[in-house]
Length: 316
Image (cartoon, rainbow, N blue to C red; front, side, top):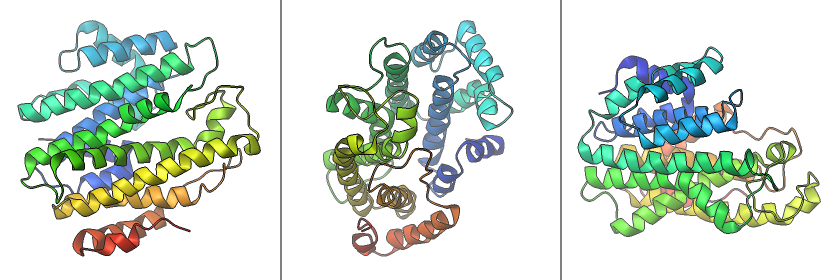
């Protein structure tokens, strides 16, 4: 379903995701891998700052509307975006969008329907990003908790929902809890991972004049000013990661448990490093060596029932 070159492309744009997805069973692996590549392609378009925001907005809107039926105008837009990228995996990704879509069109129809649904939501989040942070004439920040919840759902919670619905179609039963509950846990799991990213990048975002954490006044790089807001959303992220831990422990397929356990563990480790607002310029990251150790723990969680109750505990 996916040729070797596309697997290498996936490895090039996200080694950590590649490590997880390669272990997934074949019945869900192609749809998840193709969905990731297409979402990463749209994200690359959204971030192509050498193009005007209005041009990127147009290309994203076209791609969202014509995902499986690209017209010549959209093809030209993708080519222009690719030319703005330096040599590397992101440029190759944009150059091969049509090839990726051709693979997606060979998926079973129910998989295609779920892909269209999740990619539409992801691109809606990316479009809102441009409208709110680049085209808005007022404060470049989300204004309310509802706006932040909407954003993290569109760009990541919807991914957890997609993953879960795909797996519910592939396995009967997929989980030890009912379908409605596992979809909610999967959605919150995705939202938690995105919220950790937002907290990690908060100082850099403020320095660039924007904030995903909801503020109503002037943006400030003063850590003391940001601390209460940061702590509030850190607590929300922790709750959502707990949903991720519950998700892993509820699902049945061994290899899917392994693939889902690793991001939860990385999220918990990252959140432990974010007890306070990071200093400007500080890089918060789980080391590659630590990631390999967490992979071993993920294998243990997948193989031994009950291990997750201990290994998923938040770090003190």
